[in-house]
Amino acid sequence: MAIIDRIASTPRAAVEEIHIRRPGVYVSLVVNRRQRVARVVDFLAGNFLQKMQAIDAAALKEGIERVYTLVEREESLGWLKVGYAREGSIPAYYKRSDAYMMGHLVSANPPLTEEGIPEAPVADTGRAEKTLVAAKKLAAELSAPRGVRAEVVDDVVAAIRWSSAKAKRPAWLDERFGRTGTRFHISAKPAKATAKGSEQVVSIELQETFGNAYLQPAVAPAKPEDAAFLRAALEAAGDDLDAREVTCVFALSPAENVHAAAAFLAAGYKKTGLLAKHFAGDKRRLDALLWTRRPAGA
Image (cartoon, rainbow, N blue to C red):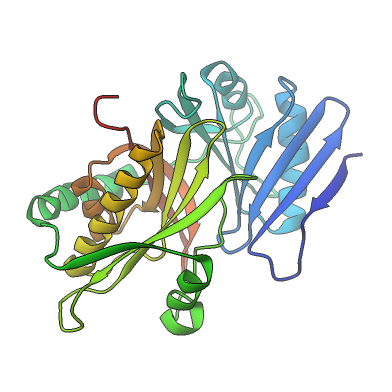
């Protein structure tokens, strides 16, 4: 029987870390309760079937609907054989090597392949392609707003500006990607109150060990004017991270949001993956686009 240890758990925590230990299996689940997903951090090589069974059992108990992990190429083959899909890649995630995003949907009665393993998740590639086509057109017209003011803001200011009570939607600023990492936020807002477009905030999670950074928009923009300010926030974050000699930046956005995709494209990001049902929507789970950015000349 697996021994499950809860780390830094609180009843209202958006993110909780759970350790699963049993012979041959030692993994950590970084659980995001808002999105009902968990990132798998693996501490032991091999034993993929045992890992999958232990992870699925814990996920079902915790109400998790999707799990995913980042691995190097050699490990990705093992996860493929137990029903995980290779959904994207993050160049230079480990400084000298790329990371592969492997995803898996959790179900008490999953559809099985002829080999008897759970079928790998499949994203809606047609819908995502339509988003990208429209986003490329918008990005070409998405000039940087005039009079934009970009600045670093602390946790308190970011939480106040993007609280669920004020914005009437979940705040993402406390939804960690990794187990550790320095966290800071960058805001881009109009210098004049009468300007079109609203303030956009991005949260940056810096993993100094690997020299990479996860970038998270507070909310997905709903109109072109907001997308322009998100672009400004992304570019300001890029300048900051370039100065820190970060080797790669990666981010996720809802695969159906044209405005968010346009902002990432305009800010120099490339789409390097499509994740099946990664976000929890109002009525159904939503696919996510994986975006990556390398410093100039990298």
